[in-house]
Image (tube, rainbow, N blue to C red):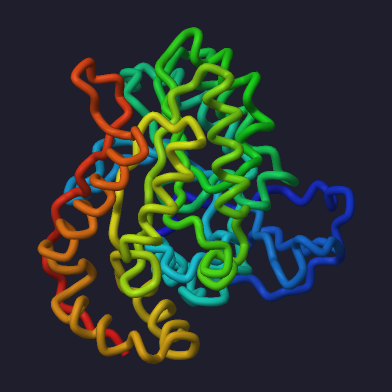
Amino acid sequence: MRWDNLSAPPDEGSPDGAAPAAPPLPLALPGAVARTFDTPGFAGMTFYEVQAKSIINRVPGASRVPFEWTINPYRGCSHACRYCYARNTHTYLDLDAGADFDRKVIVKVNAGELVRRELAAPRWRGAHVAMGTNVDCYQRAEGRYHLMPPIIEALRDFANPFSILTKGTLLLRDLPLLRQAAEVTRVGLSYSVGFADEALWRAVEPGTPSPRRRLDAVRQLADAGFEVGVLMAPILPGLSDDEESIDATVAAIAGSGATGVTPLPLHLRPGAREWYAHWLARDFPHLVPRYRQLYRSGAYAPQAYQREVTARVRMAARRHGLHRSEADDNRRVTEPPPTRAEQLTLL
């Protein structure tokens, strides 16, 4: 999407706690309202408030994801994950895929009303809608902008099936709404937890809740009656792909009450590839040759490597009772999707 579906909202004054907005606007958003906030959690960040023209977006046909429609109320993400595959979308705004992606977040302030309007359109047929598939809809900004409650309310009122993938514990704020929605439609909830090691978490996912806090959220959701899957992603070559790390992570996932685990080895698309490579060369230079070898042919590691990692996760899942039983209780390990070759460079 090239952002032609966005426009600026009217300036109705600053929200509580807003500091004067001085940063220059991106060329692609000439009329957006830029805001900064005088709170430690938003230090160094700028939010560009826009009025979206559409919000339920069709996934490109070439995509390999198992859903056709998405809602993304934000662009850019304060989670600042070094590997985030959505980084390159920021270049469509004349912003960079590195620090700008982490610190300059586009907020579609009319998301809730737009979802309701599009669900009511005669052409809409009630297809499943996935959220959190580009950037996290429960990133830090959601605590201020509260875009998700009206989105969930609209999906609930139209009994429209949906799913949410997140690293954000703020999802628990909306548990009452999620329960209401689950009474009238299918609601899928998943957390992303690639590794349990907290030192690695601080280095590679510095803006996210810790893996322990995410798994605590899985437990609370499970206790509330939801079947919550965990996407074990990304599994990082040389950093979290050894048997000890995988076993510790799967053990923690199983202990959280998750119903299944889906392993996904790291893939590095343009934008994310360069940002991750810069970090790797600085913090783990000894791993650079291995990454050059693994990703010499494109964004995805060789299928042999992916099968090896998936087998390690499967064996760990069996050890910890997180596997498909004969009764098919949905406690399972799911195979990662197949890869396609893309010729790229790393470092």
